Image (cartoon, rainbow, N blue to C red; front, side):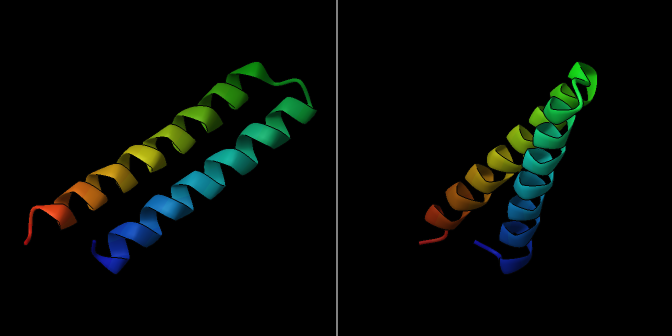
Length: 57
């Protein structure tokens, strides 16, 4: 797994979670959904990076 890809995936997860939690606190459902999507994209990016690493051997 490349360090840049791993960092980008983790950053998306953290940013998505922060946006989602803040949006829930102020009752903004649309923004909460966008935060959840960003978090999910980060998880998928991390999974992609992990799978790329397993095929290099």
